Image (cartoon, rainbow, N blue to C red; front, top):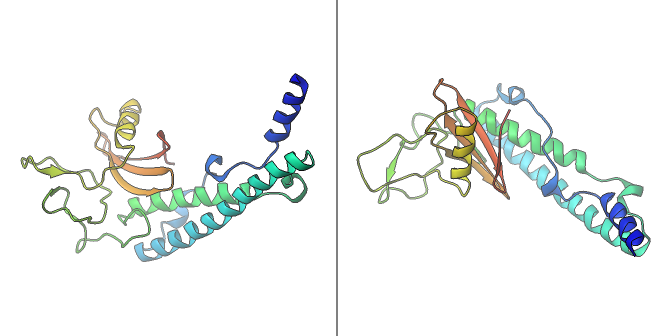
Amino acid sequence: MKMATVILAMLLAGCANRPETIHASFVSFERFMDLNCSQMNAKMSNTRAELDKFSKMQDSKATGDAWGVFLIGVPFSKLSGDHEGDVARLKGEVEAIETAQVKGKCFGGSGPALNAANAPPASVTASQFTGAALSPYPRQPSADTRVVRAAVGADTLQAEQFARGQSCNTAPVASLVAKGPGYETFSMACTNGDTMMVRCEYGNCRTLR
């Protein structure tokens, strides 16, 4: 019985990974710094669409492998291959474009670019906030007790704790610049003048390169 369990575990270990468990490959944001905000947004939209397509294909591979192990004892992807490399590459490109968008002062995601004409104020009151574009810059303190942060995510506190642990700032203020299924990207100003980009996936945070 134990031997059968071990063999089954080995077979399952050889199955295609689910897309949400695949880590992003490193892609330098500098590849996209020559693009303007409109071009970055278009590139992000296309890359996200490609990532969604390959993620669904990879998910199907993982499901097929489970059936393959059940029916014939062999993961089907061992015979036909999977799309893990494509998912990792496209995840890396999404991260790199997000970083380039923030460094280029563009909206972090597939929305409109930020510029002097349409950038939202650093802070808004509860009565003023109507879902304005997310700002990549930390909110400035205000005496208005009704002030709320427009760019707050589910992992804001985790991102700020991570930044403190990285000696970015003793009191970092995380601003949400992008989000998607299972992840959020934050921007924080460090005391040395740098901007730290942090990606949190299901509560686990890391620095974007």
